[in-house]
Length: 128
Ligand SMILES: [Cu+2]
Figure 1 (cartoon, rainbow, N blue to C red):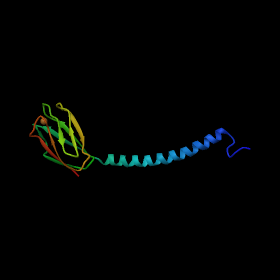
Figure 2: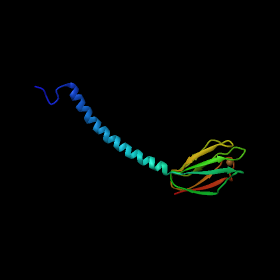
Figure 3: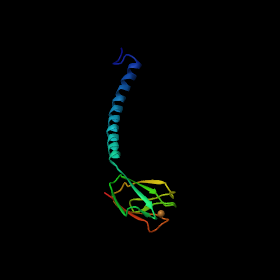
Figure 4: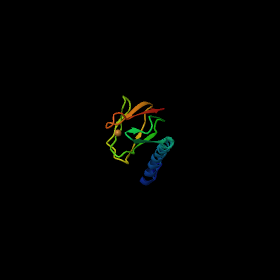
């Protein structure tokens, strides 16, 4: 006698139906997670710091974790930026006049940003 499903096609459809419910639940969870990430991304701010006259235009800046600081070389010679902390560091390529380097500060703390080329350049970034 026929079982619950009269054909292979019906069995396949039933199997797919079960899978797509799982997929829908997964998709729903993924959308919730993505929405959360998008909200965080939208909440992050971009700050701008100029490098001019062999100095950072400000001596200190306070940002929130996840914020981006864009460093623009407004001099007529090369700069670069680096930070070396145990839990957060970066060391960029040289930036030419007019170049902008974005750095995302992901860790809370107080970080000193320097320039290898001009050792007197110091910016204190407090990440809340
Ligand atoms: Cu420099």
